[in-house]
Image (cartoon, rainbow, N blue to C red; front, side):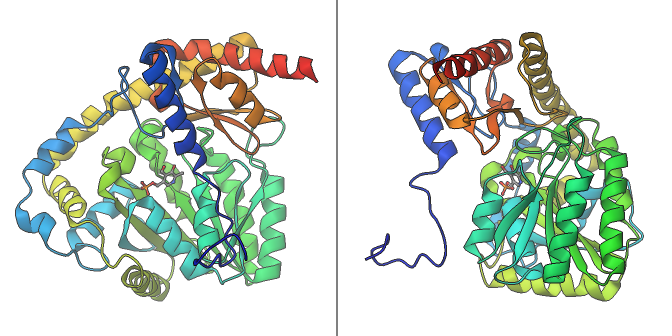
Length: 417
Ligand code: PLP
């Protein structure tokens, strides 16, 4: 008998428990025993205030309270309310109006958009490409659908986007499969906080264009889950202009999420927005992705869609949210900078942080370092290539002390060898 009793594995390898939720649970247990002030829980991917409470945009809650019963009780159309689709396109592109064809399909969070992109633009057995520092659920989602994640090296030795590794992997996979889905999380990448620069985007597009001209089909999924916590919202959206007017063999899909930007993690508001130079390709995108919605979750959460529709119909509501969100963003960026400065001061290497919820430190044996830190009440997430600190969840005053503790743990472990 295998690992399962009645269930089918279907090629999946299921960990005994979710790493992040597991470690976070241990932090909570310890806080109950020894007191909250003696524990640092840097695992949680939500924005928390200095007392550890979820930071919720009150301007969003106000709009939520004005919704009518039919705004949340009724089904939403399979692809989402038309007003929501329009609003999502504006949310994604800001004040830029692409000349290419755009279509939006509502999904439960950005996660649904990742799922639908993988399912519709790759085949069972295909490899899906992302960077070697990546958000774990990319792997879970790919595996759940009979695909596998493979990676390129994100950083070169100068801490810039490793275009050589990207080009090599894209070339290899496109040649082998004919089609390739690439997942790129920028700006404010999870887990590093890295934002791909405009110049790096130019090089990425050159690589994609070369493949497209060779007859290969490339779907580039741009995960912008943290776009409103990266920096100036209009500046951070400028790179999307570079993805307009590309070869017809390149399809851009942007994964939009209301989880962070609207602090509505549990409402599951999200969408996938395509950008193509050919109208038929955009129409096909809508058709196949709506079919996927029908065949999985059916329809998304109508309340989230009604809320965003309303906010975009009444500009003063949107303005209020943007102003309040700017305060949240400044809180977060100040935390990231405080951590970065402390890491620099004690000489522990960090991967480049530009914004967002997380910072990461590259190191060997991250699991052992995390275990060591737990003894001191510091709870962080081990990754394949280092450890992740959720600056979104740690009070500003506690952040400068963490890098030194990490360095001490690393030094202790290497002295034991
Ligand atoms: N992409 C990344 C990199 C994330 O970290 C998250 C959430 O943590 C998401 C997408 C999507 O989240 P949701 O499904 O809640 O919109």
